[in-house]
Length: 112
Image (tube, rainbow, N blue to C red; front, side, top):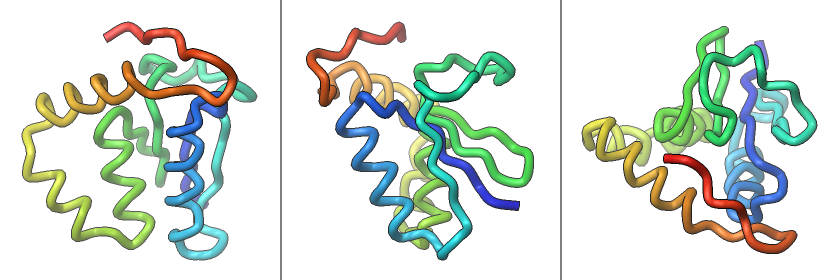
């Protein structure tokens, strides 16, 4: 089954990161899904997170980034990030998400 990476299309940083992962993933193994074109109401997590879905398992926040890096053949970087406690990784994820810039004007600050 093809893995899926959900990202916010309006966010330039998110879009560049998603395409960076896509270009480095094995051909045909990853589908990018812009969250502004998707109904995420069935997901049990906040929609302002990045999501990575593989084999029916949903990863969010820093775990989504780690799994996406691993999928993109950057296991060494994913394993390095796993050394940090999840609470610290997710805090860092939220700090970056709160300060990113959007391609179409200023981003709204997301709840933390």
